[in-house]
Image 1: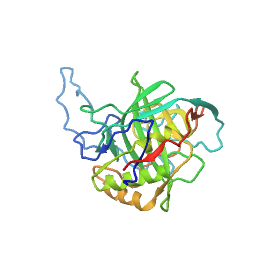
Image 2: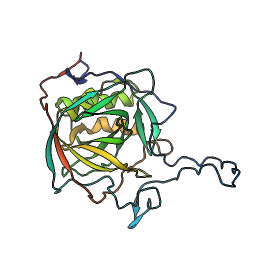
Image 3: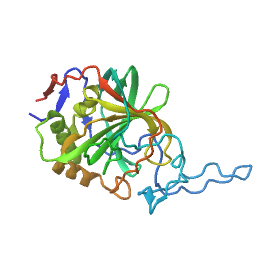
Length: 291
């Protein structure tokens, strides 16, 4: 038995691990500046190169990202702390479909990105809104604070039919091997990803169909910190085998092209309502292992 798990009620497809030539859509970061474009007829350059940036975002009390896009905005920004914040409880319908994905360096992290051709689009549907998955990446240490110990955070970046952006966050707490099916599925997936194999992440993304999560309006957590982003963050961290995470982290960390140590943004002020949503079907009875 492979140890990989899925929901029988959730379509799941194997996820391949391969280096992709391009990164997924999103704000660009710390890329070498392109050669200057020739002046136009009006004497101006056609387009300025993207800004460069690095972690930490705040150093010595100074916001080093203040001049980048909306990173100093007084609007709703991310990440935030949910600890001690008032929430409004709601119930919502959630379903998940998982397709083939690839890996690419991007945004001082590493993204597992959806290839734009040749496979079924990955979708997470919440309350009737179908979010198409663009990719996922990790932050070590975590960015959000859910009021419980956590070590690693995964962000699943998506877009809605109207073009708006939503990010689904899963926090993990490093621990000894855990028999919980969710943890076993993720641990097997991380080990296989680090080795360049093929895995099934259906049960990991499927957590949103069976576990409570916070919902709020915020921003991207990397420059240019674009606002108007809908966030869905699992309330409870998932145990993660510390050895298996170390294996994947070693494979991902690359200070030039990939994930860097300490790739997290500081907590931002809460500037809007927070909802705690519970999926209509919270049963995990349909979870089983694939041979």
